[in-house]
Length: 163
Image (tube, rainbow, N blue to C red; front, side, top):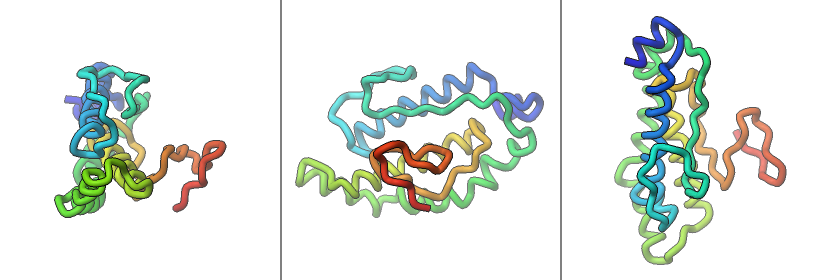
């Protein structure tokens, strides 16, 4: 439905967009709590709204205009390279990281950064393939405790991102 609306109007229907962001937000909370990151012991709230108290936060900015032509190819053709690489990283062979958490009770810092970076990448691809943005997802993990800004400059006190 959203794809047809974007094709004819260049806009994502706001109600559907807000619902989809809420579902992504809830999915990230559940994944952060359970299988995807095991990053918290706090049970995720069953809500589609942003919760500033929750350690797993996700925001997708509403686009005022979207490319009408890209809607035909970005969700399948342009996203194929990301699908392939993400499938390799998220396959069962990479789930051995949970053993470190099981036996030590805490994450090694670089492993935690890797897991969060991978999840950031996955959710960028999901937002792009879900037609929620025209910004092509970068091929990077963005590992670290903070997300680098889109401008390419690091926030105060944070290490500069490497390309």
